[in-house]
Image 1 (cartoon, helix red, strand yellow):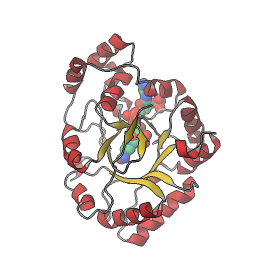
Image 2 (tube, helix red, strand yellow):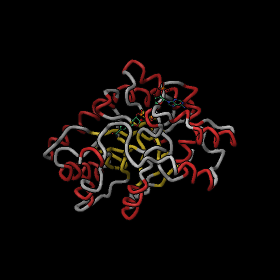
Image 3 (cartoon, rainbow, N blue to C red):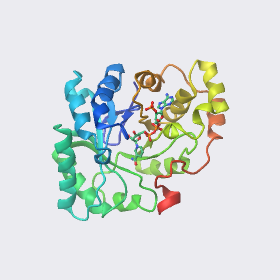
Image 4 (cartoon, rainbow, N blue to C red):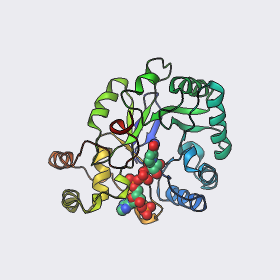
Length: 272
Ligand SMILES: NC(=O)c1ccc[n+]([C@@H]2O[C@H](COP(=O)([O-])OP(=O)(O)OC[C@H]3O[C@@H](n4cnc5c(N)ncnc54)[C@H](OP(=O)(O)O)[C@@H]3O)[C@@H](O)[C@H]2O)c1
Protein backbone atom coordinates (compact mmCIF):
# COMPACT_ATOMS: atom_id res chain seq x y z
CA UNK A 1 0.00 0.00 0.00
CA UNK A 2 1.17 3.51 -0.75
CA UNK A 3 0.35 6.40 1.54
CA UNK A 4 -0.15 10.10 0.97
CA UNK A 5 1.25 12.53 3.50
CA UNK A 6 -1.54 15.02 4.14
CA UNK A 7 -0.83 18.71 4.74
CA UNK A 8 -0.83 18.17 8.53
CA UNK A 9 1.68 15.31 8.33
CA UNK A 10 -0.85 12.49 8.79
CA UNK A 11 -0.37 9.52 6.45
CA UNK A 12 -3.46 8.34 4.56
CA UNK A 13 -3.65 5.14 2.49
CA UNK A 14 -3.96 5.89 -1.24
CA UNK A 15 -6.63 3.19 -1.55
CA UNK A 16 -9.53 2.71 0.85
CA UNK A 17 -12.87 0.95 0.78
CA UNK A 18 -16.01 3.06 0.28
CA UNK A 19 -19.09 1.68 2.00
CA UNK A 20 -21.87 3.78 0.50
CA UNK A 21 -24.95 1.68 -0.30
CA UNK A 22 -23.74 -1.31 1.69
CA UNK A 23 -26.54 -2.53 3.91
CA UNK A 24 -26.21 -2.57 7.67
CA UNK A 25 -26.54 -6.35 7.51
CA UNK A 26 -23.53 -6.70 5.22
CA UNK A 27 -21.24 -3.90 6.35
CA UNK A 28 -19.40 -5.55 9.22
CA UNK A 29 -18.60 -8.64 7.13
CA UNK A 30 -17.49 -6.53 4.15
CA UNK A 31 -15.24 -4.25 6.22
CA UNK A 32 -13.64 -7.14 8.10
CA UNK A 33 -12.98 -8.94 4.80
CA UNK A 34 -11.47 -5.80 3.29
CA UNK A 35 -9.14 -5.38 6.26
CA UNK A 36 -8.19 -9.05 5.98
CA UNK A 37 -7.19 -8.63 2.31
CA UNK A 38 -5.09 -5.57 3.14
CA UNK A 39 -7.30 -2.46 3.22
CA UNK A 40 -6.43 -0.07 6.01
CA UNK A 41 -8.79 2.80 5.16
CA UNK A 42 -12.60 2.81 5.28
CA UNK A 43 -14.83 5.64 4.06
CA UNK A 44 -18.28 5.90 5.64
CA UNK A 45 -20.67 8.77 6.42
CA UNK A 46 -23.61 9.55 8.66
CA UNK A 47 -25.74 9.42 5.51
CA UNK A 48 -24.74 5.82 4.77
CA UNK A 49 -26.41 4.56 7.97
CA UNK A 50 -23.66 2.00 8.53
CA UNK A 51 -21.23 3.83 10.82
CA UNK A 52 -22.10 1.49 13.69
CA UNK A 53 -21.19 -1.60 11.67
CA UNK A 54 -17.96 0.02 10.46
CA UNK A 55 -17.03 0.72 14.08
CA UNK A 56 -17.85 -2.87 15.05
CA UNK A 57 -15.63 -4.22 12.26
CA UNK A 58 -12.76 -1.94 13.26
CA UNK A 59 -12.95 -3.21 16.82
CA UNK A 60 -13.37 -6.88 15.89
CA UNK A 61 -10.86 -7.17 13.02
CA UNK A 62 -7.72 -7.82 15.06
CA UNK A 63 -5.66 -5.10 13.38
CA UNK A 64 -4.52 -2.42 15.84
CA UNK A 65 -6.69 0.69 15.65
CA UNK A 66 -3.68 2.95 14.97
CA UNK A 67 -2.98 1.03 11.75
CA UNK A 68 -6.48 1.75 10.43
CA UNK A 69 -7.79 4.97 8.91
CA UNK A 70 -11.49 5.69 9.40
CA UNK A 71 -13.23 8.51 7.56
CA UNK A 72 -16.75 9.69 8.24
CA UNK A 73 -18.77 12.74 7.17
CA UNK A 74 -21.43 14.91 8.68
CA UNK A 75 -24.23 15.77 6.30
CA UNK A 76 -26.77 17.78 8.31
CA UNK A 77 -27.14 21.43 7.36
CA UNK A 78 -25.88 23.06 10.59
CA UNK A 79 -26.09 26.79 11.24
CA UNK A 80 -24.49 26.97 14.68
CA UNK A 81 -21.53 25.51 16.57
CA UNK A 82 -23.89 23.52 18.82
CA UNK A 83 -25.78 21.98 15.93
CA UNK A 84 -22.49 20.90 14.40
CA UNK A 85 -21.26 19.43 17.68
CA UNK A 86 -24.52 17.47 17.95
CA UNK A 87 -24.06 16.05 14.43
CA UNK A 88 -20.52 14.99 15.26
CA UNK A 89 -21.71 13.46 18.52
CA UNK A 90 -24.27 11.38 16.63
CA UNK A 91 -21.55 9.97 14.38
CA UNK A 92 -19.22 9.26 17.30
CA UNK A 93 -22.07 7.48 19.11
CA UNK A 94 -22.69 5.29 16.09
CA UNK A 95 -19.03 4.50 15.46
CA UNK A 96 -18.21 3.95 19.13
CA UNK A 97 -14.55 4.74 18.44
CA UNK A 98 -12.32 7.00 20.53
CA UNK A 99 -11.32 9.09 17.54
CA UNK A 100 -11.86 9.43 13.80
CA UNK A 101 -8.90 9.71 11.43
CA UNK A 102 -10.65 12.03 8.99
CA UNK A 103 -13.88 13.94 9.53
CA UNK A 104 -15.39 15.62 6.48
CA UNK A 105 -18.12 18.13 5.83
CA UNK A 106 -20.09 16.00 3.36
CA UNK A 107 -21.22 18.92 1.20
CA UNK A 108 -21.68 22.69 1.34
CA UNK A 109 -24.89 23.05 3.34
CA UNK A 110 -25.90 25.10 6.37
CA UNK A 111 -23.17 27.58 7.28
CA UNK A 112 -19.99 25.83 6.17
CA UNK A 113 -17.67 28.37 7.84
CA UNK A 114 -19.40 27.89 11.20
CA UNK A 115 -19.38 24.12 10.79
CA UNK A 116 -15.69 24.25 9.92
CA UNK A 117 -14.84 26.20 13.07
CA UNK A 118 -16.53 23.50 15.15
CA UNK A 119 -14.51 20.81 13.38
CA UNK A 120 -11.33 22.82 14.01
CA UNK A 121 -12.17 22.94 17.70
CA UNK A 122 -12.62 19.16 17.89
CA UNK A 123 -9.50 18.58 15.79
CA UNK A 124 -7.51 20.68 18.24
CA UNK A 125 -8.93 18.58 21.07
CA UNK A 126 -7.70 15.40 19.31
CA UNK A 127 -11.06 13.87 18.38
CA UNK A 128 -10.04 13.83 14.71
CA UNK A 129 -6.55 13.27 13.28
CA UNK A 130 -7.48 15.33 10.24
CA UNK A 131 -10.41 17.33 8.88
CA UNK A 132 -11.52 18.00 5.35
CA UNK A 133 -14.37 18.70 2.98
CA UNK A 134 -16.28 16.97 0.22
CA UNK A 135 -18.05 18.39 -2.82
CA UNK A 136 -16.70 21.90 -2.32
CA UNK A 137 -16.10 23.72 -5.61
CA UNK A 138 -14.50 27.15 -6.21
CA UNK A 139 -17.67 29.00 -5.30
CA UNK A 140 -17.94 27.31 -1.88
CA UNK A 141 -14.37 26.30 -1.02
CA UNK A 142 -13.27 29.88 -0.14
CA UNK A 143 -15.86 29.98 2.66
CA UNK A 144 -13.79 27.28 4.34
CA UNK A 145 -10.22 28.31 3.61
CA UNK A 146 -10.51 32.10 3.91
CA UNK A 147 -10.98 32.02 7.66
CA UNK A 148 -9.42 28.64 8.35
CA UNK A 149 -6.99 28.17 11.20
CA UNK A 150 -6.72 24.52 10.18
CA UNK A 151 -6.62 23.84 6.45
CA UNK A 152 -8.70 20.98 5.06
CA UNK A 153 -6.46 18.04 4.21
CA UNK A 154 -8.65 16.76 1.37
CA UNK A 155 -11.55 17.69 -0.86
CA UNK A 156 -13.46 14.52 -1.71
CA UNK A 157 -15.17 14.90 -5.11
CA UNK A 158 -16.51 12.79 -7.93
CA UNK A 159 -13.37 11.83 -9.89
CA UNK A 160 -12.70 9.03 -12.37
CA UNK A 161 -11.36 8.55 -15.88
CA UNK A 162 -14.52 10.06 -17.38
CA UNK A 163 -14.37 13.13 -15.09
CA UNK A 164 -10.74 13.66 -14.25
CA UNK A 165 -11.04 16.94 -12.35
CA UNK A 166 -7.86 18.47 -13.77
CA UNK A 167 -9.15 22.00 -13.03
CA UNK A 168 -9.95 21.01 -9.47
CA UNK A 169 -6.45 19.57 -9.00
CA UNK A 170 -4.93 22.83 -10.22
CA UNK A 171 -7.30 24.78 -8.00
CA UNK A 172 -6.42 22.80 -4.87
CA UNK A 173 -2.67 22.69 -5.48
CA UNK A 174 -1.75 26.13 -3.98
CA UNK A 175 -3.69 25.20 -0.83
CA UNK A 176 -1.85 21.87 -0.58
CA UNK A 177 -5.24 20.15 -0.28
CA UNK A 178 -5.33 16.61 -1.70
CA UNK A 179 -8.04 15.48 -4.08
CA UNK A 180 -9.81 12.32 -2.95
CA UNK A 181 -11.92 10.55 -5.57
CA UNK A 182 -15.41 9.38 -4.81
CA UNK A 183 -16.92 6.95 -7.33
CA UNK A 184 -13.43 6.27 -8.74
CA UNK A 185 -14.98 3.56 -10.94
CA UNK A 186 -17.78 5.89 -12.12
CA UNK A 187 -20.18 3.86 -9.98
CA UNK A 188 -19.27 0.75 -11.97
CA UNK A 189 -21.25 2.07 -14.93
CA UNK A 190 -21.02 4.36 -17.95
CA UNK A 191 -19.21 1.70 -20.00
CA UNK A 192 -16.02 2.02 -18.00
CA UNK A 193 -15.22 -1.71 -17.86
CA UNK A 194 -15.84 -2.15 -21.60
CA UNK A 195 -13.71 0.79 -22.62
CA UNK A 196 -11.26 -0.37 -25.32
CA UNK A 197 -8.52 2.05 -24.25
CA UNK A 198 -8.55 0.77 -20.66
CA UNK A 199 -8.78 -2.87 -21.75
CA UNK A 200 -5.92 -2.57 -24.25
CA UNK A 201 -3.67 -0.82 -21.76
CA UNK A 202 -4.53 -3.42 -19.12
CA UNK A 203 -3.55 -6.27 -21.47
CA UNK A 204 0.03 -4.97 -21.58
CA UNK A 205 0.34 -5.38 -17.81
CA UNK A 206 -2.01 -8.31 -17.11
CA UNK A 207 -4.48 -5.93 -15.44
CA UNK A 208 -8.23 -5.30 -15.80
CA UNK A 209 -9.89 -2.14 -17.08
CA UNK A 210 -10.92 -1.40 -13.47
CA UNK A 211 -7.31 -1.64 -12.29
CA UNK A 212 -6.11 0.66 -15.08
CA UNK A 213 -8.84 3.20 -14.27
CA UNK A 214 -7.89 3.16 -10.58
CA UNK A 215 -4.15 3.20 -11.23
CA UNK A 216 -4.55 6.28 -13.41
CA UNK A 217 -5.89 8.15 -10.38
CA UNK A 218 -3.39 6.81 -7.87
CA UNK A 219 -0.48 7.52 -10.20
CA UNK A 220 -1.82 11.08 -10.53
CA UNK A 221 -1.69 11.47 -6.75
CA UNK A 222 -5.45 11.12 -6.21
CA UNK A 223 -6.62 9.11 -3.17
CA UNK A 224 -9.32 6.55 -4.09
CA UNK A 225 -12.07 4.72 -2.21
CA UNK A 226 -13.67 2.19 -4.59
CA UNK A 227 -16.67 0.34 -3.19
CA UNK A 228 -17.30 -3.36 -3.54
CA UNK A 229 -18.91 -6.07 -1.44
CA UNK A 230 -17.09 -8.89 -3.27
CA UNK A 231 -13.81 -10.15 -1.90
CA UNK A 232 -12.29 -10.90 -5.31
CA UNK A 233 -12.94 -7.31 -6.39
CA UNK A 234 -11.52 -6.00 -3.12
CA UNK A 235 -8.29 -7.80 -4.03
CA UNK A 236 -8.43 -6.53 -7.60
CA UNK A 237 -9.00 -2.91 -6.60
CA UNK A 238 -6.06 -2.81 -4.23
CA UNK A 239 -3.65 -4.73 -6.49
CA UNK A 240 -2.30 -1.59 -8.16
CA UNK A 241 1.25 -1.24 -6.98
CA UNK A 242 3.21 -3.67 -9.17
CA UNK A 243 2.91 -1.78 -12.47
CA UNK A 244 3.36 1.76 -13.77
CA UNK A 245 1.40 3.36 -16.60
CA UNK A 246 3.63 4.81 -19.31
CA UNK A 247 3.42 8.41 -20.50
CA UNK A 248 1.60 7.13 -23.61
CA UNK A 249 -0.92 5.24 -21.46
CA UNK A 250 -1.51 8.35 -19.35
CA UNK A 251 -2.02 10.47 -22.48
CA UNK A 252 -4.50 7.95 -23.93
CA UNK A 253 -6.49 7.82 -20.67
CA UNK A 254 -6.44 11.61 -20.37
CA UNK A 255 -8.39 11.69 -23.63
CA UNK A 256 -11.28 9.77 -22.02
CA UNK A 257 -12.13 12.81 -19.88
CA UNK A 258 -15.61 14.15 -20.68
CA UNK A 259 -15.00 17.21 -18.49
CA UNK A 260 -18.29 16.79 -16.64
CA UNK A 261 -19.77 14.60 -13.95
CA UNK A 262 -21.65 11.45 -14.86
CA UNK A 263 -23.25 10.33 -11.60
CA UNK A 264 -25.93 12.98 -11.37
CA UNK A 265 -24.84 13.95 -7.87
CA UNK A 266 -24.20 17.64 -7.25
CA UNK A 267 -21.04 19.07 -8.73
CA UNK A 268 -19.92 22.46 -9.97
CA UNK A 269 -21.82 21.96 -13.19
CA UNK A 270 -25.08 21.20 -11.48
CA UNK A 271 -25.85 22.94 -8.27
CA UNK A 272 -23.84 26.09 -7.92
N1 LIG B 1 -18.62 12.35 -0.68
C1 LIG B 1 -19.60 12.03 -1.46
O1 LIG B 1 -20.52 12.84 -1.74
C2 LIG B 1 -19.64 10.66 -2.05
C3 LIG B 1 -20.54 10.34 -3.09
C4 LIG B 1 -20.52 9.06 -3.62
C5 LIG B 1 -19.62 8.10 -3.14
N2 LIG B 1 -18.77 8.42 -2.12
C6 LIG B 1 -17.78 7.45 -1.58
O2 LIG B 1 -17.08 6.84 -2.67
C7 LIG B 1 -17.20 5.42 -2.58
C8 LIG B 1 -17.14 4.79 -3.94
O3 LIG B 1 -18.12 5.32 -4.81
P1 LIG B 1 -19.35 4.47 -5.40
O4 LIG B 1 -19.69 3.43 -4.42
O5 LIG B 1 -20.40 5.43 -5.80
O6 LIG B 1 -18.81 3.88 -6.76
P2 LIG B 1 -17.48 3.18 -7.34
O7 LIG B 1 -16.56 2.78 -6.27
O8 LIG B 1 -17.01 4.05 -8.44
O9 LIG B 1 -18.12 1.88 -8.02
C9 LIG B 1 -18.77 0.90 -7.27
C10 LIG B 1 -19.48 -0.06 -8.21
O10 LIG B 1 -18.55 -0.75 -9.04
C11 LIG B 1 -18.63 -2.16 -8.80
N3 LIG B 1 -17.24 -2.62 -8.78
C12 LIG B 1 -16.30 -2.35 -7.82
N4 LIG B 1 -15.12 -2.89 -8.16
C13 LIG B 1 -15.29 -3.48 -9.36
C14 LIG B 1 -14.44 -4.22 -10.20
N5 LIG B 1 -13.16 -4.40 -9.91
N6 LIG B 1 -14.96 -4.72 -11.37
C15 LIG B 1 -16.25 -4.53 -11.68
N7 LIG B 1 -17.13 -3.85 -10.90
C16 LIG B 1 -16.65 -3.33 -9.76
C17 LIG B 1 -19.36 -2.32 -7.50
O11 LIG B 1 -20.16 -3.49 -7.50
P3 LIG B 1 -20.02 -4.64 -6.35
O12 LIG B 1 -20.21 -4.02 -5.01
O13 LIG B 1 -21.13 -5.59 -6.72
O14 LIG B 1 -18.67 -5.24 -6.56
C18 LIG B 1 -20.27 -1.08 -7.48
O15 LIG B 1 -21.44 -1.35 -8.25
C19 LIG B 1 -18.55 5.25 -1.87
O16 LIG B 1 -18.73 3.93 -1.36
C20 LIG B 1 -18.45 6.31 -0.81
O17 LIG B 1 -17.63 5.86 0.26
C21 LIG B 1 -18.76 9.69 -1.57
